[in-house]
Image (cartoon, rainbow, N blue to C red; front, side, top):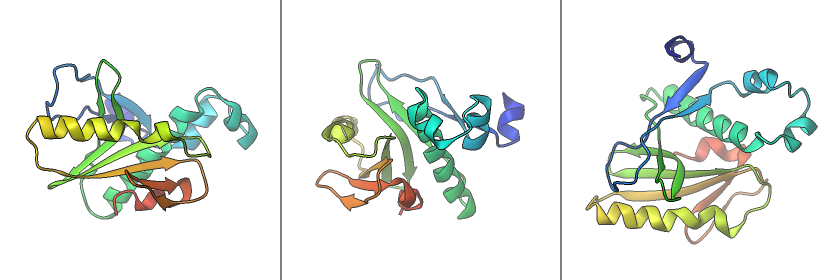
Length: 167
């Protein structure tokens, strides 16, 4: 595993180290930094195959993580990314804490935005408040659609605008 990480083939996304609940899952999540490699390993050769593949969401999430990783690395910053998951359901795909700013990112491969894309953000804000943390939370949903827009609870970013996640 360390060779794959040192070769920038995979990245272990550790759990957010801030202990806001006892039910937090501490296991890291594994993401491939090269989505074409994971598609080749899964024998996905054409876009149509990816659209129907049962791992499409996980592949899309790995792609978003890799783009966030590259954005930070190219800006000269250490790419410190985390995930948050509780054993009873609350999950945020990617967290990036930079000073007092916390970017909470949900990744959805669907092309149409749905209300459930935004459901975890309010609960995360409650957890942060309960823990007595003073963080400005920027909620972002990256989805497989074409239109970016500001919603009342989060920014909805089209996959093409993934570079703006940490803006």
